[in-house]
Length: 500
Image 1: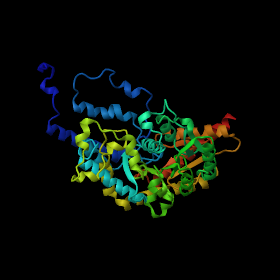
Image 2: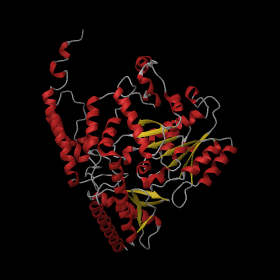
Image 3: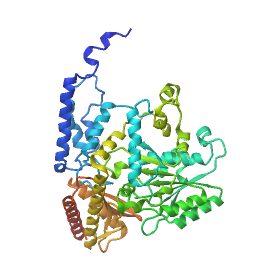
């Protein structure tokens, strides 16, 4: 028998219900106050590396601390090191999808703390995931021939899609691995604008990042289909298997859209899997005027859409759709004895129509992610989602007009969605000096704490980039950020003149 002296009563159980209720109200007020006052906060923190950790003990705590003390440390320890992604002037990456209904959903999901492994382990989690997957599929314009699975990010979704593509090649990699027997070289093709998650997936799958062929893009940053066909034909003549092509709907830097219909024809010609990365751009399919972006996607073998990028579901929530779920399951299904009862199906069991989602990925334990998405979609409705996306597109066009009207700046890419890439190109500076200047402007804007931009490279040159995705962002916020960009540009121009 264990020694009871090692477990005194005060170290057992949970906090009393009445105390929990009190603290829950306190945390709810804290969250509501944070959301209400976020616009008054400095976006980027003024901390040095290690400063937050220095406020914590290096030794794991032995004695329990009062919750009053812990909650107070949210403000004294945690908040000084937070970048406020939800601030309406945060224009980095693809913006922030935080909102009230989603926060409520996250709180409830945390309280329930179920694992959505199988239907049996939580019928509501599985069935609600199935419902939400159907809603998203309808909203972005995919047919019922696509079966969906929820993952955390598009990187993981792409990994799973390419694993299924590898399985279709018939190399028995699942059973035998990639070493010790004759496995031909498999190659994946993507544009020079496509996401780095493709390279990472090839590393994890044991196929090697050198077997990702980056196909040139045209003047609109879309994959060159003729160059794709030529690359695949050359590889086939060399005994290399053209395994898959990744087309992108909404590239990370410029939100360009590859010609998916033409790419699908090439994939059919060479027997290659077509995966479409619509992680960002898929949301444009909610708009009648945006359905053009999803043209040809119906022909894909798999598609990834990230509601946490532009459908107002907070991190993390990514969806992979495939027309070949049996291949995905063939790669990842592995049910141990202790799960067989939960995964069992009887002929009269109504659960037979529902997938055990653990069979379609590397995860066994799975969060109840569908709850927050369900709450967002119910609270906003398709019309509300579309209206917000449409407003973000209008705001991006407004920013593009400001850039086009200012002779100090040049817009470096079209603006099909809610991202604008632009560059300050003063006379007399070479490309490398312009690169440093544009990066310096972004750093100065971010250091102000009043706004947050990112920079990227387009055709090898550093450019400034804004991404609008926050439902709190208005044209007034953009006007202030644009004025800040202009003033920092003027200030640096004056410094350059004085230095010369």
